[in-house]
Image 1 (tube, rainbow, N blue to C red):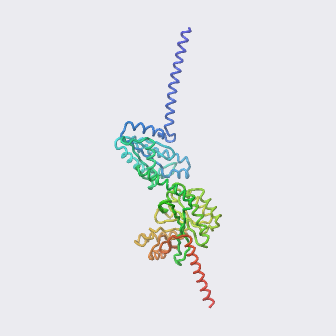
Image 2 (image 1 turned 180 degrees about the vertical axis):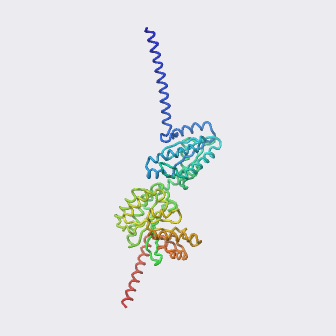
Image 3 (image 1 turned 120 degrees about the horizontal axis):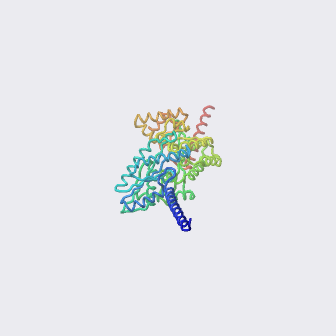
Length: 470
């Protein structure tokens, strides 16, 4: 073979190699692009792909709409069943989302339990909202995962961009996230469109969070105590600690306003511990009077809460058997396994657990047996309705019967008239709480009431001894 032939052969081999490498390199580049724009668990496009798609659609369509979809109870699924089941649930939800969108909208997984859907074109927002409502209807029923029937809802936030008010992909995602947050605050399992006032509200919430943090260090919180009386004797047997915020230089706010903000931000944890410590220190002066303190769902989900409670009991020396923690049904249904675990630790100290606001939710007999409450507190609404119609009265009576069968004491809340007091007393309630007897008051006023009550008891005892001596 001559030099020319060798040169031609070498050139051919080199060209073939270059062609092979270029094609291989191009394939690798395409594979890399696919990898960085796809979610590995669901094979849906990811956050990067969403931003790219919105920017591309913005150049060709007047209206673009985005829906941010956040699963409502995914953390509990992971906690209860493990991450393997959680991953399967994510895959099932991804399949459901693709099935509902069916090519009309593009679907994405943004990470964790967050999904998104994007649609472009005339009336894109209206059409996308319809798809989202269909998704919520499907999520209202259980999803089978690993032979388990799991119910997981979703909260959805919607935002749109138009040619007249074009938004970047980042701003659209931010707005839909704000709207999704409002869906969660509004009760979950709903769609909410972004509104300019949401930003103002979020800013107000952030300012309130800052004020709450300052309030702790500035000692702006106080506790009022509302007595509970024995239904038969009328004597004070317990007090409920109620948080008050003496806000310096600001508009006075009730607990119904600032407690939800404290729960959302996590500030409820230090505030709640302050309430427990302060209330126990005050109640040490009141002898055998039971102290009731409300705890929130956020506190109950905090694994450190039982430990901190034990430390405060030891620090103050307050008798654990005189402490009663009040929880609502919402506290328990959000995460029943974690809640039950925490309550078992708390009970081991000797602390009693009371179910507050009974009659406003859907607690069943099974629910009551599962958590083994020591007391049931009938909500004011049930007491009021029981005095107005036979059906509500029968409901109240049956609730008291169930409580008795399960070994629970019963307190009627919000009693404001003699008729209501007679009704709950006849029905078999052990304790009564309400403005008919006492409103909430500072600890110093409780001091006077307890002192007067003890003096009366001593006087009666002295009178009895005198009659016996005579």
